[in-house]
Image (cartoon, rainbow, N blue to C red):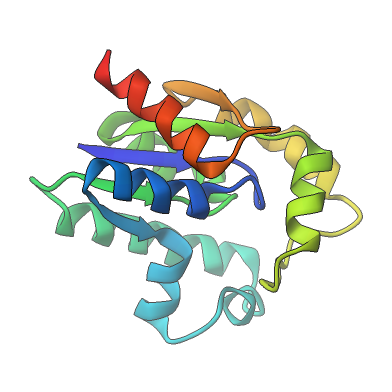
Length: 164
């Protein structure tokens, strides 16, 4: 089983994914990290060639991660925009158990203010970007409200849903 975490940048996918993988004893894969390891370039550097180029690299990496994990259970944290590629969204919905980590824009902004990671798409239009992506995130099998919860609390909530 592939447990997939989706949501906007800064909602905690990587932190929750790590906690969830520890809790379940599964391998954790962060898609952005897999992309940088595979390409030898940062996300920011890849975006310099345009978002369309980055999304194609992201889709290829998603396919590679899933093909390597055939038969293995993993926890996979997606990038915030992975779901915007129709083929990636189809793969996520058909081949994984997906969880949307839903955070308020205020919470996301606060999280990103504390992060050292550069986010190429977090700018003055970020709130409208979140609003435009929300219908895609909501296609996930489960939605977890994350505001005022620790990564451990969210991981416990996901575990409870998986045990049903």
